[in-house]
Image 1 (cartoon, rainbow, N blue to C red):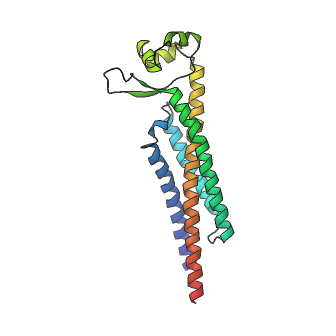
Image 2 (cartoon, rainbow, N blue to C red):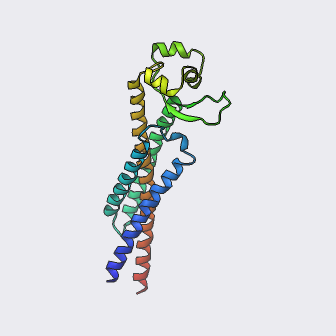
Image 3 (cartoon, helix red, strand yellow):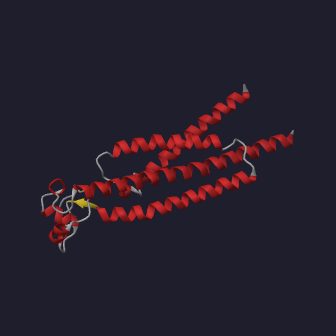
Length: 207
């Protein structure tokens, strides 16, 4: 009974740790990383999918991490966590550059309007480059009637080009969330498993 109770508590702890890791990463995207959240139409659906998918991945990983870890296993899990962190950085920097290039705020900062919203643009076609000239994207969109008009009429870029950018941003967003969450979870779970193993060894040696 004690073993089953301990196993149940352990599973509850793992589930809570997985949920906490997901919450921590989404907390980052709601604060310091808010500018990396792509402003596309189906963002809530993507967030829901990523949340459920990430928790599932974390629970599957927890199954493969034994309750007691040897020193070699602990080092291996630490190395995997570092590699995941490096993978997160490898996704973060191109994603940041992509966001800086293709996300603009409307109306432009030069206008006396506090209600700015973020929008995704596509690659400028030839006529679009001529229309923009020396203006910023936000200024050009504002003068041409706003994001809805520019997107629907293809005044500066084609809708296909814009949707391609949206898809790329969505994939980067999903990858970065899953990598960051898995890194945090694996590092925390490995440390917790290691501490549990140390406690078990100490109690056994006292006997």
